[in-house]
Image 1 (tube, rainbow, N blue to C red):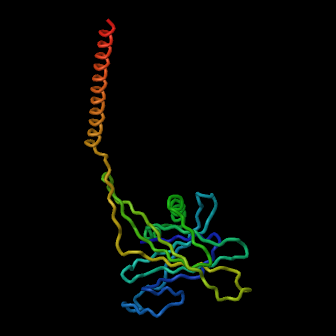
Image 2 (image 1 turned 60 degrees about the vertical axis):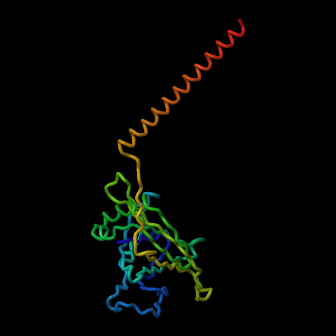
Image 3 (image 1 turned 45 degrees about the horizontal axis):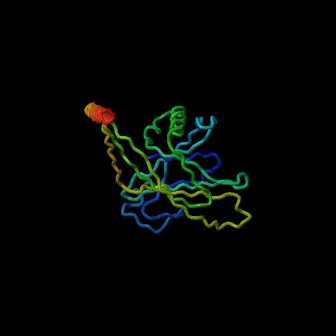
Amino acid sequence: MLCVVCRQDFATYENCQFKYGDDLSPHGGNWTPLTPVDVLDNCSTFINVTFTSSLVNENRTAMVFRGPTRVNLKQSLWLNFSIDTTKREFGAMEFLIFSDWRDLDAMTAAERANYLAQEEAKQPLYTLPAGFRSWVKIYKIMRRDGAAKTNLSDFYLITDFSKYNDPRPLENRTSDPLLVLFEWKSPTYEYIEDILSTTIWNTLGSLAGVFVTLIKAGEYFYAWIKRMRRFVNSTVCLTV
């Protein structure tokens, strides 16, 4: 299962929920699902984790959300945060994605902290700006090369933004909302197989090519010496 990790350095959590179909409104829409409403899971699951960041060597707090899984129903994860604009000139929140929710859910608090620190160090970090409504479309690419025994998977994101029109009076705008919707771009994985020349036969073929090149170079050098000898002999004869 997909994990969405939001680092709460300066953001305040408001709420989260799962949505279905084309319902992108934070307060619900008029979309009628084919599946009965009482069967749909509207409550997102998340875990609070405090870990020591290997990037800055300080403690950080993060919320790990279980991402959308019911792709056939166009399930998406809606997150709502806010950032206090009176204490910072810029408002944003960083997040990362990985795919081991079941493993993380079964860990102890100490194991989660250690695991999340490792994921932060190796996974790319993305930034979401405050004051915007963001759509993050996720797709997954499976990679395999000729020598590998297991597949490698990479997540790729397509992000769109639209400005949030804040209806509050100016005097009440002490924080900027940060609204983001995570959804799968496609219900299928893209599969790429890399062909690597790592067998012994390919190595022997490369060495044979080098030997042939050396032999050709030697033949050319020998022919050049013969021509030079003929030129020297003809010059001596003309002089005599």
